[in-house]
Figure (tube, rainbow, N blue to C red):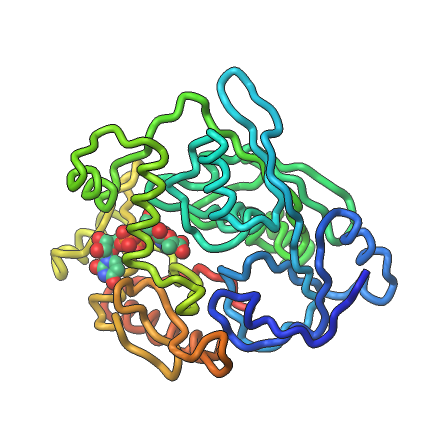
Length: 357
Ligand code: EPU
């Protein structure tokens, strides 16, 4: 096992924030994790699992031992009468994996094309886009317990998926106050492989305004999976910054849910507020719209900026990979200023989406 010291993390996080890992170990399979756990010098030390770094904000050098997940491989695991069960290593790039599934004839992930990050990170925040969430296509995953070294498999119910949420984002009962019932796996599990269930009777998932617009423009009423994939890529490229060019971590805040009464109050003052009524009668508001309405689109604090085309995305206005750039502190100062102004104007507390380290 090779423990690398003082490893620059700038190219391992999509915000391209300059920070170092005090120590880093590359994990390409279960045996690498077992080697870490067998080493008396590091077994008891705090650990941080790093995937594609697309959903983190580094606010300083990382002191816990960084386990950089590089478990590769993708294959059709088995076929049932109704579905293809496809498996991928946690270190595989998410978009490359989606592209591969389509080329191999297993559609179903196309609405989630071009989401930055790795396969292993996808269940952690239950990624989603254009009407499909990871949980809709999830079969199971294999992980390893970083305290005991035990391998385990979780199904969808055990992952406790929610909107940009899962068991992997919550602290375990032993880490929180006694009396609390949470059974989270935050900082406890390292995901090795994820399996997806892709139905053989494929149907396009439609109903999003941006997709409807593409259908109308091209006069297509029943798109193929490849067409949907191409449209999603085009839509994302037009309004979201490419992290290889402009550092960012995707949506910086979750879309908040409010009661129908709260929403009626906001509509009375701001009739244009973008909102979606959910099945249980509560209402989801477009956080990007709220931030935009507070005048933040295009603004900056130091080298942290609010993206011009999508106010929900905070970006690195520095020189990115070339050297100097945004600090995690600047990003968080901007995020807090945005939270304060949205709260003052709408009475809503925006929750951050990326993990702050
Ligand atoms: N809007 C504005 N001004 C802005 C930004 C948005 O008025 O500056 C309005 C838009 O016009 C639109 C509405 O807000 O009417 C919603 O915007 P958009 O369709 O871009 O979607 P979103 O709710 O902002 C969510 C996800 C994205 C996902 C898209 C498409 C979250 C936190 N974000 O964004 O996911 O790609 O829907 O499904 O749920 C991510 O999580 O990193 C991510 C990019």
